[in-house]
Every structure is written in structure tokens, then in C-alpha cells.
View 1 (cartoon, rainbow, N blue to C red):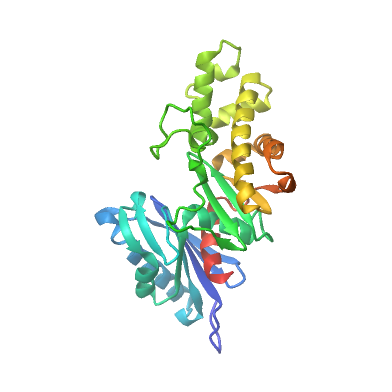
View 2: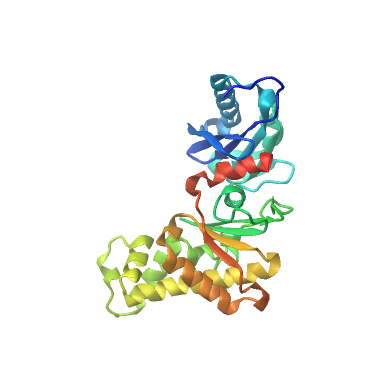
Length: 319
């Protein structure tokens, strides 16, 4: 891959910063992934060296490929925290950052244009760009993992919001009677029910209240995968738990759809690997409670996996 003759903007970088590793992708201008690799996230000294490590990795890749920076459109960066539209990050606990102007600082280090987004939002953008919602411009993505993340894309652009907290779907209140606190400090958040830890928590409560025969009592520790596997095998209690999760999440998404009217809702994260038993249940409950004009909203499974972030990051630059 050598740049020849007149220098054109032919390449871009996608950089997804996590608490443990930084995922990096090198792309052609059409969104083709040429190479991907990881760099350890150095959180020492309040994450002071993270951006310089990224700049070095970019310089090394360009030197390796014999490509001039003049041929690079820019760098898209995803971070695990709220991001304002000007590229300023307001506190990333996992990185040790306070307020950091990532766009300005990384731009100075690389000499390239830098755009920054919240990691969940850029994952949604990635799925719109080259994944499960490719071809759509209005997308809601929900990531079901240890917690519940989310991203909202309207007319092809991330909805970050004034405080950078747009798309925090996991902290929609779905149960005003909840007595246990969410990790955010509030009570009754969607994340407390629709995440991997959430469905296990619901299962433990249910098993403590009922003597019904169920294979779930055979698992110690009980995991979300166990619950979905046993539901597929026909266990009635497990099926009730999956239906409860689907009802809570489907209802929350129907409310959200009334506000943003997405063409597609993409379900990703580790819990989404449960497949049709989960996606179909969510969609059925969505249709039960949504406004009539939203009933044909598409539901898709995320297809990019852990690469959604780097695709979404580079989409901020190339798309």
C-alpha cells in the first residue's frame, strides 16, 4: 500500500479506547478495513500517556506502510465516557481522565483531523456504517452486556446531546418500586433488568420466591447464558425470565422509538448471542406496546462484534 503521484485522502484510522486495551483500525476511504491491532491502555498517572501512545501507533503504522500523513483523512476516536460535540471528554473513570480535549490534544500530536465520540455511540455508528443496520440513517443500538449501553443515530449522525449523555439507554427508569440501587446510584434503571447481571438478579429473586421445579437451581453460579440455554430447552421458569426481560426492554424501546422513530433497532453485546429467543421476544413486546406507526420498525442483530467501535470511529471521519 503505497501512495503514488498526487496525494489523495485515501485512508483513515479508527481508535476505540477501552479501560484495558486500545483497539486500532486502519481503513481505506471506502470503509474497507486494511489492518487492526491492539495497544495496551496505560492508565498510570491519570492516563497521561494514552493519547501519545495512540499518536505513536499511528506514526508507526504509516511508516510501516510507507504512507504520508497527507493521504490520511483523519482519526476517529471512541472513549468510555460522555463526549461533547467539540471533542471534549467529561471524565472517563476507567481511563483516569478528568476533562480532556481529545480532539485538540491528539490533533496536535498527530497533525491530523480528530473527531471524538462516546464508545457506545460510535459502536452504533459502526453498525449503521458497515454492520447490521447498513443502509439505514436512523438507528438505535442497544448493547446488552454486563450493563446496558446504547447509541442513537439520526440522519447518519450521533446524537450526543448537550451534556454528551445522549443514548444512555441503560439508565431509563423502568421500575419506580425498585429498592436496590443501580451502579449509577438511581433505582429501577433498565440496566438492572436487561443486562447479563440483570437477568441473573431477576432469576435469583424469582427462585427465592417460588418452589417451582426448574433446572436453574442446578447452576452455581448461575449465568445469563444458563438462563437462555435452559429457556431454549423448555424450562418454564427460564422462559418466564426471558419473557420478563423482553417485556421490560421491548417496552423501553417502544417509548424511545416514539421520540426518535428509528428505521432499525440493533441488538448487540454478549447477551445478544442468545439469538432468536431473545430478539423475537423483545420485538414481540415492542409491537405490543408501541405507537401504531412504529410497528414495522426493523430489529437486527449486531454483526461487527468487538470491531463495531473502530468502524464507527472511522465513520466519523470518512462517512
